[in-house]
Amino acid sequence: MKLSQFTEQLKNLNRISFQLEDGTEVPGHFHVTEVGKVHRHFIDCGGKEREETVVNFQLWNADDYDHRLHPEKLAHIVTLSKEHLNLPDAEIEVEYQAGTIGKYGLELHEGTFILTNKQTACLAEDACGIPQKESVSVERTRSEKPKIKFSDLQGNSCAPGSGCC
Image (cartoon, rainbow, N blue to C red; front, side):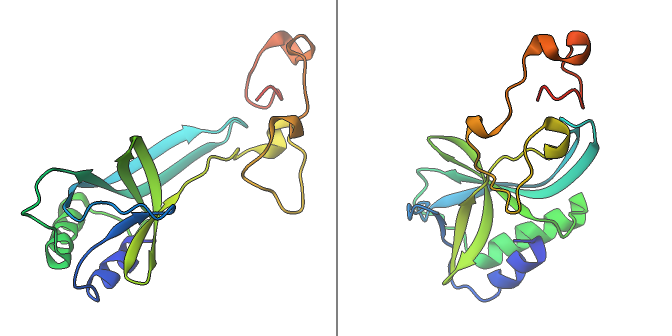
């Protein structure tokens, strides 16, 4: 969900609720402790330079039962963040601690914001020797990747494009 979609949805809500995909509810007395812009500049395993910017919300479950966050207050926090941080209309990534800190996507379903599980994926499958499929699944088993002996690699190095990753 992009920031503009989120702020538009806030206008239609009387209360804010978040839930994990498995149905576990984020306690109603959560706080949004951060709204920020996270920019990543990286090189993938195929040697391609990439950039990604997300808007980050951090949810925190405190034992403060008397101060529930209302939609108007969160909308105000987002407005301040947009002004001071020059937030783009980017995808929202939510940090929430359910055991350990996790990063989640965000969707709205019947008035509840759902923290959606995010998956990792290889961004350079063609450079890594991963067989191309018509429908590429993010969840792969290790046996699908061809086995390459380290000793057979060119120059015995694990460099971008060498096929080792």
